[in-house]
Length: 154
Length: 201
Image (cartoon, each protein chain N blue to C red):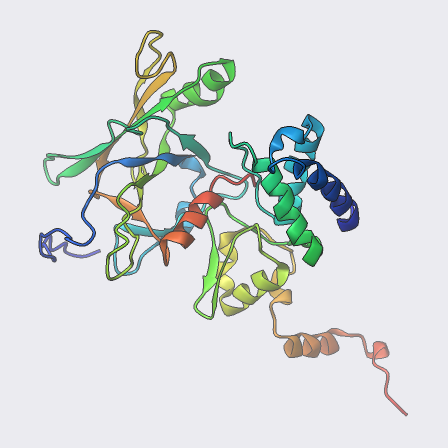
């Protein structure tokens, strides 16, 4: 997989070409379009929708450029929601789908109610350990550790 | 379990500020009924004609429908049917597949001939002006209870309507509800959830 900088470099070059005229897809080759179709979901974490409009690819270039200039590539979440499921809470106005879900968000929602695991299509095997409050996790680590692992200060 | 009271609980009137309009938007979603994760479907606590979350089984997805034309999904209607012990509803859903090639026949028409489906469509009437839960009339579900099955699949080469494509009529019989809607928090969240149904897992 290319790095953020490599993707940015390709997008900057495409952007120079599409902005020669009035932001049209006409200056993009088939290979350019394939690159956009493949990388848009990677950058924006949602599918690229092909329609018959004349500047969809140009718009996608701009959207990816704006995002990547400010952000790193989003880390792929270890949690995947079932199709049709969105996560939201009264304390957070944002709506989360697989497009913007991160491990931290998924674990926060599961911490509130572990029964929500049924809404996930896949998740890490140790999800129930991950959602335990940190102090309790640390306490369990100490309890589980072998006696020789514990170093007593002199 | 319990005794169903079967009593009307609301005045019959119409909104002057947000008048009812007929028709359906051209975009919808079709799902193989067996892919729905029925164990984890969430209904609205207070309104049992409203589904809040319609999850699919892991790895499954729905498919987009786009029906062009000025009257998309022509033939869509709900009709009460008299029963011996209880009256039920028949839901008809009409659509046109403006394509006909080997892949369309193999991947859409042939499975449609014998499968059970659930379809979500968007009414033109959203009910945005409603005081409580504005926008809850936008998305309606057909086939949730009994599955919508093909009643007609027709490919008329000289049809003025389909231009040689497929005319489809899906029918769900004996549905206990006159209308089943999808609504979660607001229309934007609901739309996001419906869009996520067609994402590739």
